Image (tube, rainbow, N blue to C red; front, side):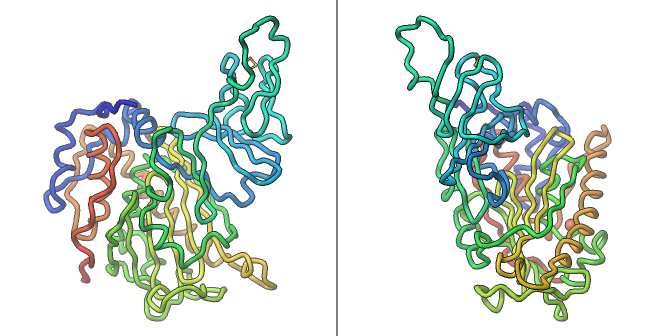
Length: 397
Ligand code: FES
Ligand SMILES: [Fe+2]
């Protein structure tokens, strides 16, 4: 697909394309323009590996589900053997959707609700009833159009662009980073869903810094020093770093104490840190010493994002007698709500004629990495890997 620059005046992007210490955040249009949002879905999300959520419990064998990926509707199928496949949710007859977006269904056959064409779970056409005399019609030529689906560490991803690079190249060294926590063996213990009245990029930007922590997160500051933190040099499409735990805290919870054993595969350092890793375009992974927190972002409009926050514990721990992992969800629900309120406030301001891009602090280099990558993507017509951080140790104050 030929790349076209985003529908935004490139002069407005110059401050975001400057070097870190001269840079300014994105212009207000980046958070409010419906045209730009549609362009982002088409050019950032659809050609990327979009996370669909945890595979566990997502779909039973012999079931199907229609999900939104950018501006596309995708039909996922899981067959008897457990194989997950993805197709454009479009009948090959006259294009009716096979399932309404968001809906699920069961059964080994997929029947189009319009004229009754039937497909198998592998997308092949099984029957086109009452088609009549079309001697040249080949059933084999009219299967559903497949899209790429892959799984990593228990998360499912889809990529609707035929020419995109494989998921492992998209992940780069994130796979190595996260492996020690073994999220593949984890199960969801808390599910917190939010409708946030803010652009998806504001949620990324907010996730990338703790400059705001002293102001809005008193509970967090009690268990993790807000000025601690190191950025990580990434390969692949992610940005992130870690923060320390306070000396008297074992994990992120309202008391600083947990209720589950520390994860066995971690180094002594990893047991004293919390990592914040944002995989473009929509999965935030936060490994803790005893659990993993994740946020999946689903942009709905320029001003609204659905967020699915999950706490993940090893299956053996979650299923053990007397286990109570609520300390993790309780802490992050409080912190999430503080963050969403801040993002929603910025969103309201971004729509104002009085909004001006702002200079960022030394503690916000990861925010710079993010908006610089976005601004470059607007100009180039496609997203490329973020710059590496120049400050690998954030200043201590
Ligand atoms: S559009 Fe699906 S059967 Fe006609
Ligand atoms: Fe925050």
